[in-house]
Length: 450
Image 1 (cartoon, rainbow, N blue to C red):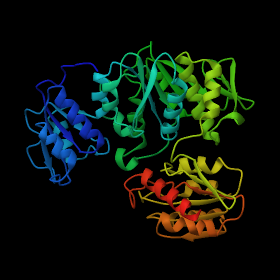
Image 2 (cartoon, rainbow, N blue to C red):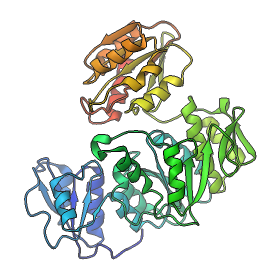
Image 3 (cartoon, rainbow, N blue to C red):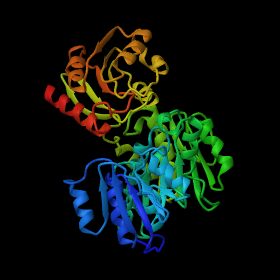
Image 4 (cartoon, rainbow, N blue to C red):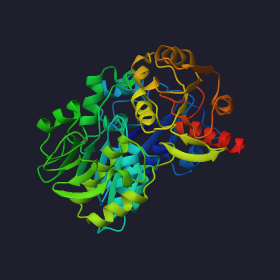
């Protein structure tokens, strides 16, 4: 960890006492800042708040009182999920106080270089896969970020012998300033989180920040099949390394005749990949490009790709019950992710879908639903998804309230050799704290069937 002076004797407000806010407050205190942390929830009996107070950090809970943003405030560090319309953030920006996320703080103290991965879909899988491909290489990878491990905690343990492989959300990237990965990766861009960003343009601009500080000595690995991502090539100084499933890209990774190549060298046949689905070919190509830039051998890459079966909550195989195969894809929080999940299977699929209603329709899901054997819809969007399934010609449509109800209902509608797939196409926050909790509930109910 680099002992920087950026925050010494500075007045810093940390907004949000989640995992990243707690870690950021402790780190800023260690760096000599005068820290106040604020959360809208009451914190009198909160163990983290009690610990921070014992360190001399001012903890303010139960709302956002006036005076937190004052003339002497130097920096505001916010939880990524807090929108920029929050009154405290508006006040800070009006006073020209820098508004950062914990990613920027972590970058400034890190001795290790970064590999940053973003995109609408596939971030977690690709991040984990890159970590697998680099494991045992000259620089041991540490995997962190939006994947669930707090970045500013990981970088404190990192040295020049490590590389930080980090998943980055658009929320996190909006709050970076100096952040400068050695290798950046943008997998794809589709409409998502428009309730937060306001427009696709704003969302894309947030993602683009991953490469904006890169130099010609750095690398930008990008999806050449995505026109929005490809447009960023003209806007970065980094050396561009494309990947493609639709054509030859001589300077990068590509799919030809069902074989994954890097430049002119075949790496692995698509059928040998351990993780199922066409979307995982894209993820693998991106990971191959990164691994080759880091000097990993072809044989090692192939072996790791064969052994990598995916990550929890992303097309995760759960169990086989009476010859029915259960898959947990709870991380599919948008329509595109569910479309890709449905396209991954050749067997009949019974789909469990639904969740938070963000006001969008599900018309773009209709083509993917046309091959679905049955739908069990739940959550706030259950009626909307059921309507889309009816338009798609799905013969069996069940509407329930919860995932707990959906699992046995789907099982009762299934036959031998069917796939029962949780792929919600929606965020989880109508009924769960996270997509992980939703997936864990699905897994629990599957094991109850057993």
